Length: 627
Image 1 (tube, rainbow, N blue to C red):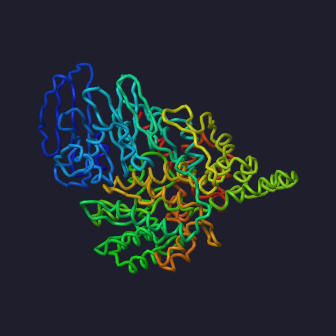
Image 2: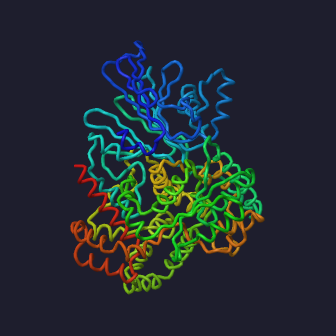
């Protein structure tokens, strides 16, 4: 299991075995190991093994080695992530009499847990997934950060074993967990392009949800939440706040968050796409740091997706050392096997991150900032405008029955690309914003998934799974949509994919927009008007008084993506079509199969649907091979 995730921590390794009052501790620097005796903790019936792979970012010396124990040997920790306020927490603990042997955030974290237990989680600012073993109480404690930036999965086997890891492939490599696919998770993937915790693609492996902790005592698992995104977004909003005041508050909060996220003992780079969010990160850094700064962008020469000129302009404007990585369709196609080897669960996203992370690592960078989260928190997506507009239309249509009938009739004449989704949207209850957003964002409609793939959504939102909490609406439509974009898109797809596709290259990705203190500042400032701008986010940045270059604010939103549609037609069509005809006969009837591929060739079926089916079949083949 350790070898399979070695890419996540290429700098160091270590493991500890605790059994019958004896502790065996080995590491890269001490492969022969050391034996520590604690007879008072003897429990001959159970063995605990903690393994760590380290990417050295803070305290590069052996002082940051893991698994790490407290001085008295009671608590052992293995931890992935960064605690950005660890220095402040360390000072608090030292004032209470705690002494430290290293300069690492790991020692601060395990010391905080030893002193405050689960309550200490509320003090943490950062991204983390960690496990602490308590030798005295003989129980395991797991925890994950508020937004689930760092992954944490677990499984309980029929032999009575409890396993946990940062990646699913570790479970499959152990031979102790079945690779059987969860059919409900498969439905969720076809509907949304990703799978939401606590489910995973595999039936017997669960994901600890974001902002949750779990405690396992050898018999039962207790899962509880320690923070709520819905409650944070449901706070009272200051409707009277002007957009200028909101912009000033957001700018200061972003600069403060970026400063916190820059903490590192190794150089930090920035993924600069040329869009507003990544450019804002560079702008924020330049408010407090004038030294050398490296930026990276992926270039798609000769395509409409190439934003390299904007990234180049921003790099020149802020004086960064800029690196460009040119990706062609041949390089993309030739790298598919490595890409799928890195992909931990099926996803329709993240390929762009894979390539830019490779470029950054080749340039010697181990830590990079990303503008991920800006669209979800600041209202950059079309959904913030389109969904309320759809809601108003549906309410009006309910008052005039013939309008609904005429619209439903029209959908039967529309191309396959739009008809099924529009028909499902027209059936939505106008007051159910969540259902309306879900159908607006859907990859495939429920009817398509049922009729063409034979899948049933019997437990659509995992309501019976440990740690699941139903969402609640806020009083403000803007923040209701923000919650949905974060809960259903950013967290299960963008953050998960970004972690997988950067860590596979040994890079730690940090996301200053995805920070609970920045979010609180944005929510507390209230909702701001668009004032005629294409999005709420652009309206906000335009009020920041020269914070960003003027030409960036005038550009239409493109999104940081690859030219999939062109490449699928030119380079992948034969492979995809043969894969569908060979592997998908159990899912697609012949007429739908022909209609689907025909629609893609003529431009009536979006590339994401073809790509999602290709990804799904590659994963199903992987599961079959594991068996």
